[in-house]
Image (cartoon, rainbow, N blue to C red):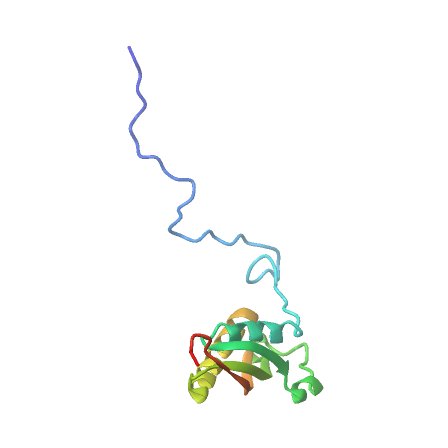
Length: 139
């Protein structure tokens, strides 16, 4: 006589359709196992990279606006109130419309900096330093 195992469906160890629960931690343990702190000196580099993601924009460089440097943010400031003032210098591909590209750039940069660094851009000054001609033009 041969014994056969019951034909019950196999249950997976992990249900991939639901996120894994965050384990409870010690007192003061809030949003996860750790905290990510982005140094303020890195934020202009993040902003420059975000600016270069916009089609037709190259060579972006970002510097904090001078008044932001002279007014440090108190350590007790809640994260949702941290704002940035930035000067952005870019090159735009010609014949793209400069104003429309700058407006698109400002919106994209504000979204990406908040997404990547958790900081809102309060004031952004866009300086178009060069118009780069398209390379595929003849003549």
